[in-house]
Length: 186
Image (cartoon, rainbow, N blue to C red):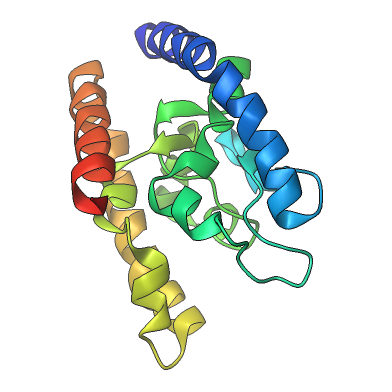
């Protein structure tokens, strides 16, 4: 219960702080991508249930990253609408990043314990793989590398989080995330 209270308070404050910038960013992303400025995608959530995750749209209709999309992604600004997912209860501030079907929903055995957690905006795995897109671009077979190396590593880290999570650990992950977004990208 304390985790849910933390999620509600944190997301509510974030939404209050970012409501006007989010509205401006929505308009900006709509113009930049020449489409609806919000990207909505079905993701695997807690207990394997699907939910609609929100992001600011950074990709044009031709699947290319928009003019300012790289900047929004680099500083994780495109993920700000996910505070709404947290407030609604689909996500948590800290937890395994929500993935598309074909990954977490296919886990077997004790690895399925990850599905007992709500997916999060940040996690130890997302901190380690903050530059995941760049890592994958360097691979000969990005999908194979993702499936066999990165995803397997994320499963291990998320299982460790499942067995050891606490509000203190969540706060440390949040602070490390803020630090990494600000200082690594500058």
